[in-house]
Amino acid sequence: MKEIILDTETTGLSVSEGHRIVEIGCIELNDLIPTENKFHCYLNPERKVSEKALEVHGYTDEFLSNKKKFSEIVDEFLNFIENKRLVIHNAEFDLSHLNNELALLGRKKLNSENTIDTLVMARDKFPGSPISLDALCKRYRVDNSKRTQHTALIDCDLLAKVYINLLDQKEPTLNFKNEENIKTIINSNNTNQYYKKIIKPSEEELNLHKEYLKNTLKKNFFS
Image (cartoon, rainbow, N blue to C red; front, side, top):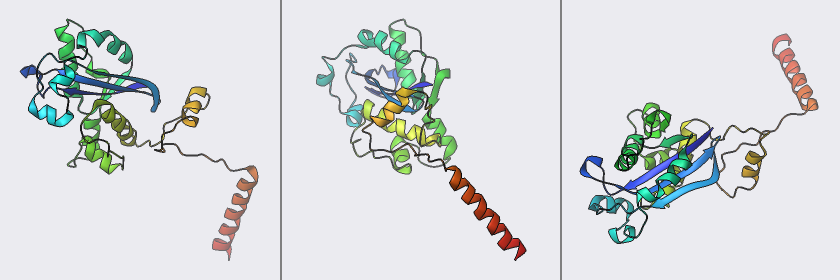
């Protein structure tokens, strides 16, 4: 199963107030393992960034003025996410902005049915507890020290780790017949360990264990 961890940054909160996307970040997962495939771009929103949004991500009007417009990257973006499940923290927000951009171009909107909202997952799992991305990083001891401001790729990287923990699966289920999965693990420089080493007992060890159990039962019940 291929999934896309997705995050956007915008000029402000509400689409109804004309706010637009200024950054899109995507990281591909294959069976919960990050691949080398990423999509990232800054965008010229064709409007001013609100003061509150500037405090969040730090992207100034001047910085964004020479970036590509959404219309220039839309096909590349849609091709990247095609036939893959989207994993988003607060999916309603990101999808509303993405679908607004698509609607402005007369393009088909994204379907929320193939989307996992980690905010909803966290709310169901920890009712009444803080469920922001920072709060979940703290809960799962995910290092978010680089998140001095909200940037799409950093947030995607953190969300990928949080998502795996929310699934109660700190190590991906691996298909060891898939050489690509093995190469990914062997060649990974990631210091965050999500993989457990599985050691199978030998036949001799199994026999010794059975003998131990037999002797323990005799001692406890027949002595």
